[in-house]
Length: 227
Image (cartoon, rainbow, N blue to C red; front, side, top):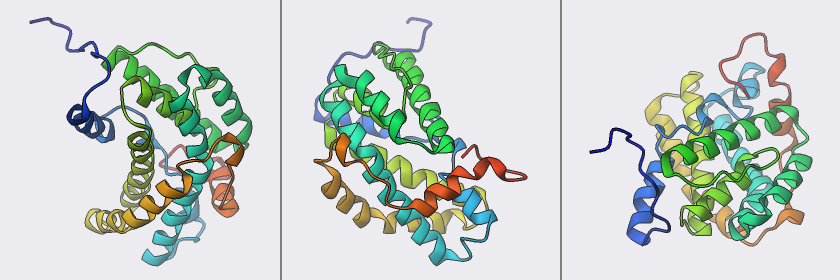
């Protein structure tokens, strides 16, 4: 048996294989760097914007809607045409004007790329900035995931990140966070349908206040997360 535990990825997987791959990519143990970010939740919590569980649910729903409308328009074309990733990545860089959100997107995208190269032996796309949404689209295509599977993976990572951050900030406990995540399922499916055919020109911010909270994260006196 070879001493190197990394296995060369064999190419596109059949449907059953995609289920295992999706579970691996969605696993919290996969080193994509998402758990060091709160998506502005920490700032909103410290400034009293989130006062109870209902406020948290409203914040998470707004965050998911913004993530879908602002990021899936970059994920979809990158999945359909990975060769266009440099152009799509530049467009994403221009779109994310919030310096904290921009930094978080680049951090996660580069972590995803580096991990996928090491784990699955995929080629290095070497994009100019490495934003997360287009990177995930291109990586998903390379690994044989369907576009819908890749988009669901993206949205799952967003809601998982919010719920995990809420637990670590002490807003809710683990069981209540899981219950909240479960209640978001119908919303996630609706967002999938609404955003499935969106392209780069359709990208938009739907929650300016949430973007403002995230943009002021660096000004917090003490912080647990990077964004």
